[in-house]
Length: 51
Image (cartoon, rainbow, N blue to C red):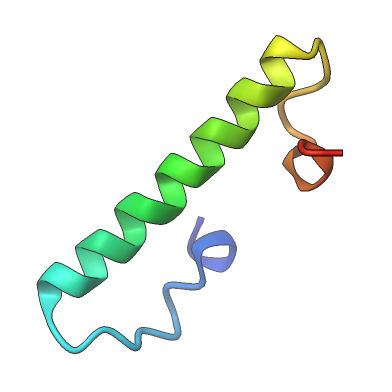
């Protein structure tokens, strides 16, 4: 999960910014998985969810 969210490179100045970044990435990942679920595609293939 650390590699997927790129948490090693933390550019947030405050802790609130870091939490906002994590929440944004997790919610975007969830939305792409939901789009794949609706279109009967494998939910793990999120790279091509919008194609």
